[in-house]
Length: 176
Image (tube, rainbow, N blue to C red; front, side):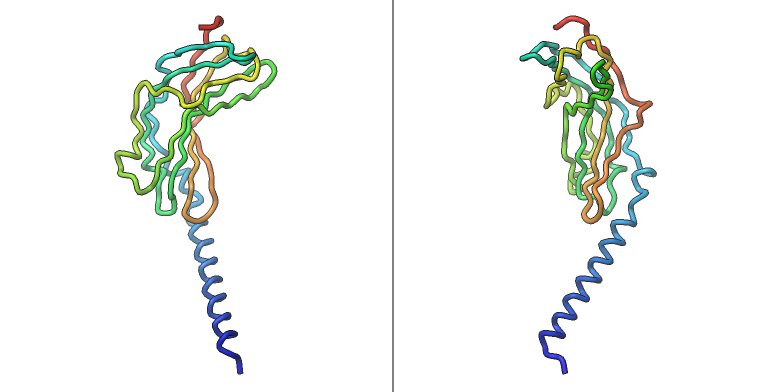
């Protein structure tokens, strides 16, 4: 006959196997959720360009923007938090794709409904818009809101505002 330890081992590993199976089912149950329930982004636009300078051989722009985005639809029972960030995108002659994160925020699922609605004016960037060369002057820059879903169980995945709803602005030709 089997000992108590063998039986205990069988029970524990059966429980772990059931837990793993349920976690996988939970992760797969919300895979298509992001395509159906998109956050409502009313405003993401440049407010003021504070400065555009050459700083140690690289161009650096400091700016502020207005944002109004309701992130409530992005949440469901398996989302622990959202990592929300604003990306400034532009093209240069040396690099076709330049994406720079200029602002971020973490929104937790335990926050109230009002805390999941980001509505701020004249938000100063947390991180400067920096180009590793002197190619930032005169460029067209578009702002896009992106977010990463941090689930309780399952895969981390990212989503973004549709490209046709992004806002664009032009930087001046001279340093400011």
